[in-house]
Amino acid sequence: MNGKARQNSKLIMILVLAGTVLVLTAGVLISYLSKRIPQNPPGTVGNTSGNLHNNGLFVEDGDKIYFVNPYDNNYIYSMNLDGTQASLFMDVPASSLNSAGKYLYFNQQSSDNSTVFGLAGNMHGIYRRKKTGSRPVNGLERAVAGIAVLIENTIYYQHGDSETGTTLHSVDTDGKNKLLISDSFIDPSCVINGMIYFPDYDNNHYLSVLDTATGTPRLFIRERVHNPTYSGDYIYYMSVDNDYALYRYSLSSNTIERITDDRVDAFNVIGDLVYYQKNSTTDPMLIRMRTDGTGKEMIAAGNYTNINTTSYYTYFQDYLDPGKLYRVANAAGSLMEQFIP
Image 1: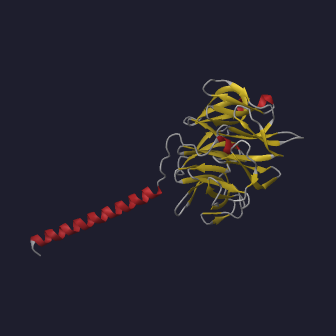
Image 2: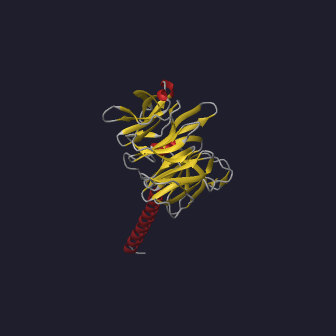
Image 3: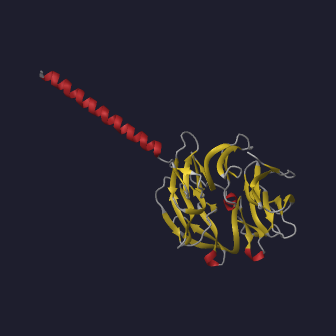
């Protein structure tokens, strides 16, 4: 072989090796990008505080609603905003539904029938599933969990343990950076500007705020609250000192208003409407009113629970018969109806 031929042969080998390295590098990069969880925009919160206080059984995202279907083992379903075209999303019982970007996040409840990763049994924990495509399921944390909320790219959740009790933990959406945030019992439902507002049971139930970056709580206002719910300019809450009547605190004017004299069992806020369950031994009822406390109207007599709101409808269940689902349109004068997806 003459010198020129050897040079050509060597050049060909170099090109082949370079091409192989390029293909392998591209393959690794494509694989990495396909598995990487995209960052959510600043300010992302996975569900409303009102829904999460009511077990997070519904979450609205774009033109879809994801919900827990009591007619089918509390499995996760999806449907259009008007309640049409409901279909099974995943056959696991769940709560604390959170949605952002391409993924649905949820707290899987115990079930002997459910399967994750092909394994059956009690698969408690925080999971993530892609909304479209092949929709693989990813376990972010195997634990007995309570309320969970997505804040930007981190899920904060109540972690139950027989020895340490209920503590607040976090895990990133890619399953990394698992942290203990607080040894205290903290409900993470109410999120404002990336901070968690909660009743501090270690400090007389006063409304406090948790800096998620440092895990440090501080007093916000000296009001004893239950289920603080953020909507618009206000934090709505049940007042512990006033027989659990409903109040609201204005973030802009720092003023407090009482908006109902009824003792409240549960409530939720959507737009300019409040739905609440009136506590009464003789006359319990689900009530709708405007957020300033005017325009009260009875939606249904009896005791109702799991009040979850969406743009078009508010959904709820009978406390004594939770296997049925009801809804009412978010408009004055609208009537309740049983909803069967």
